[in-house]
Image 1 (cartoon, rainbow, N blue to C red):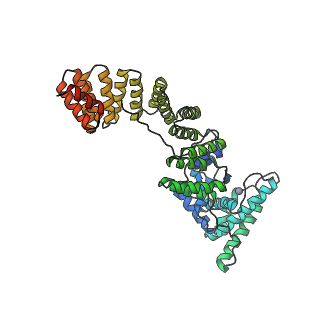
Image 2 (cartoon, protein in one colour):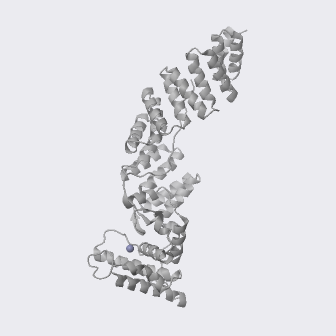
Image 3 (cartoon, helix red, strand yellow):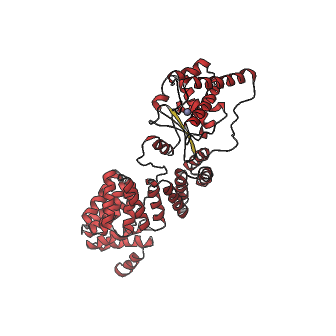
Length: 446
Ligand SMILES: [Zn+2]
């Protein structure tokens, strides 16, 4: 019997729960920070005014905002934008809105927890910077004020945003500052502190390092990101993935656990923690984690597959078969689940079932010697010796140094009364180090 093929499915991306709204977008953004180039280009123009790079923030599309939104989530500064809005042609209007959102970040606004009057003050600060940035990127005052057309007028006492007149005043004041610095090179009004990298910059760099396989570098950067933003679940999760890749399973488990503490519905954190536990041969622990992942996402095919492997390790073959079957339902073209299910069926002496699964596997992956070998074993157990010999022969063709295949073929030949053929196979197996075959040669062959 051949060893089980263990495939550890690995998902180095965070997942997200059922939350709707903006929080959903934040979590989506943690998967990767790529976004459309138009958005990046527009933002880069504005950020250049403050000498900032776009990876200072997490910039990502979000259908749940009306146009654009600045936010702080788990210690990262975000700029969310609606893709359909970003793709429109009103270029200056778009730039003014983006500049306003950047203005919130430049001013260090926390973007929550303000009273109404504080909130209105904060909006005016963002407008002031927006006007300044618009002047710097070449917008006229009229172009800068274009977007104020739809702002509310009149009493703003009960509003988070100031009325139109106040906002025009703030934008104009900022625009004047920007415009004067162009003409007279006056001292800059806004000098943001660029000396330190932000949490999201470290996160981004770590992600890129991990993508190129530099997991040590990635771990270092995730650690820096965590220092600056200790409550970001994705930084722990991804650091866990890098540790797992370096076979530091204890460290990985610790990080997944922390990410689960911060986000109790973190499906992939359970799934991957299960993999690390499996690697440490904590099969019961692994099964508990896969089960939790499946609870959170009943269509998580990989979790069924991996739970099947752990059950198989615990010799729960019926349980394993059930999980592989579920996996195959969800992903019918993945060959390995058929192979593993075949082994479990074989262990339960369901040789017909096993042969069916190996055959399906071979259909999908025709060059795997082990599959032919195992199918041969099942055929032999059904006393189909010719069939077994054909499969062993194919296994030998694919892997000419497979001592087990020669040895087993010899046994089937012996079963058919072909002792000469058997001896020649056993001699070959013995020469490849198969000790039983060497004994048989000594006792039965000339
Ligand atoms: Zn605002």
